[in-house]
Length: 210
Image (cartoon, rainbow, N blue to C red; front, side, top):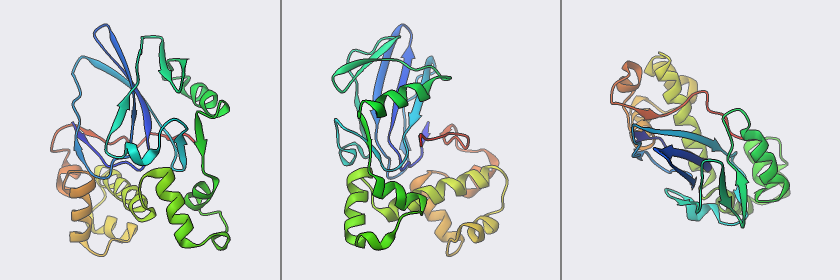
């Protein structure tokens, strides 16, 4: 399966046969290939930009991740204690517990910058960029590029024309969009519009935690 660049980190749980696994996945700066066994079932939780794990720096996770030890079908180990493995309908309960116990922390300055409701005059651009890289492992520009190209891919899959996507999302021209798709999505606009190129890890309905 083709993996798509992502500005967020996450937790992923999967079972293959009778064996359970858990891992922390980092932000991905470009597209790649993910090994997905046919008989495995997966559950993932993506965390919002500006959040991070207390136990590990997000920059160290970029284009990688860590396998969590002692995972079972019911529990997993994270930050010095065992947690109940979530189901698809109660993932928010796990997230609330991680936040409550400060296993997951948030940089409010980065969150405000992402949401566009912070006072940009409170800190210098250099300070904000440093905080952004510490919280996300990526630059502000890289996060914006990845967010934009994922939207572009969703629009193309939904049937939008290339020219409309270029105008709607502010790309310079069609070659500019093509380069972004090739680097971050691993597909051409035609492949996305026509459903070619095989399986791709791009879920338009995927939510991130707030």
